[in-house]
Length: 460
Image (cartoon, rainbow, N blue to C red; front, side, top):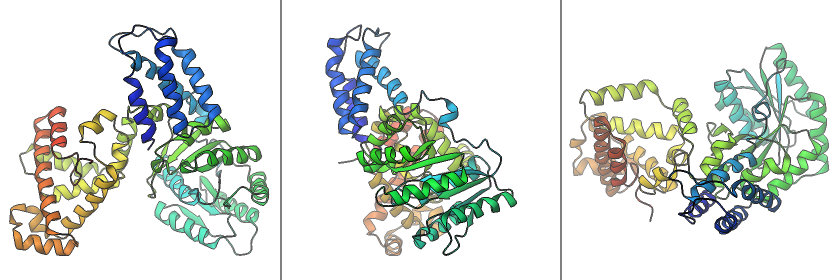
C-alpha cells in the first residue's frame, strides 16, 4: 500500500543535514522532491500545488531542535499536512460514521460498477455487527443484475447479517422502502442499501439514486471508490458529489494501489472525509480510516494502533495464553504450535497485512520480505503441515526420508519444500526461545537470520 510514495519520502528525509533552521535554500530541493513524489503517486495537480505551498509556509523559519536533522524536521511538517489533506482537520463528528438517528439508520452505498460496492456493503455490515454491536439488514436496489443480488446475499451470509430479498419486477424505491419497513418492524438497527452501478456515470443512474436518496433520507450516503482508478476515481467522486449530498468516502482495494493518489486527493476534491478503507477480498478487510495514522504509514512510520486492533479482533487470546504458559514452563515448541501460529497470521490478513502496518525500520530488520511471496509460502506450509499425522506434528524428529516423501505427495509439493519448512520451523523454535528469554533485539536478529518469517526468504 502506497509503497512508491513511502520509498520516495524515505529518500527525501536524508537529503538535508546539519543545519539549524529550515530555510528556502535548504528546503527548495526537498520540496521539489515532495512535489514529484506526489505527482508520481497520481495526486491531483491542484492538490499537489496547495499541499507544497502549505508545507513551505509552515516549514520556513522553523527551528531544527534536539537531535533532529532538517530532513526529519520537514517530515514533521509533511506529516501534519498529509493528515490535514486526508481530513484530519475536519470535525470528529464528520469523520466518524453517524448512526445518531431513530432506528433503523439507513446507509446508502453509491459508486460505479466494479468499485467493490457489494463486497464493501458486506464488510461494513460485519464491522457494524462486531464493532458497534448492531443488528444489520442489507438490501440490493440493483434490479438490473441478478448476479449482484445473489452476491449480496452470499456476503450477508458470510458477514452474519440479515439479507432482504429483492422481489422480481419491483421498483428500486419500493424495494428499499419495504426493507426499511421490515427493519422497523423487527427492531433492526441499520439498513445498508447497495445501489445499482454502471461502468460509467450516466444520467439514468444519477436520476435513480437521487430518487432513492429522496425517498430514504439516509443518515449516511457513502461513495465507494476504487483506489486503483487514479484520476478517473476523482472525476467520478466529483460527479457523484455534485448530484448527491455525500457524507463520506470508502476507498476500496487500497492494498493494490502502490501510488496512493486517490487516498491523498479525494477529501480535498470532494470536501468529504474518508470514513473507511478496504483491503483484500476477505470480509475482515475493512478498517475505519484515520488520517493522521495513514499519514504515518505513508511516511514509513507504520500504524501500530491498527496492528494492535487487528490482533485484538483476530487472535485467539485463549490459545495465545496457553502457548505462552507452555513456553514459560519449558515445554518445547512443536509443529502443532507452528501450524497454530500460521493460522493466526492468516486470520490477520497474512504477512502483507501485518508488514504494511509496521514502521519501515522493522520491515528492514525483518529481512525486506516480499509479503506476497511470503504469503504464498505460508499457504504452502499449511498444506504440508496438514498432510502430517498428529503424532508427526508432536514429534518432528519422526520425520525421516520415507515420511517426508509421503507428506510431500499428500501436499502436492517437492520433498525439498518439506525440508525447507522444517528448517523454518527450527528457526521459529529458536525465535520462541529468544522471546522466552526476553529482548526485542534478540527477536529481530532471529527474524533477520530466518529471512523475516516462516516460509519467507529475503527479497531478491
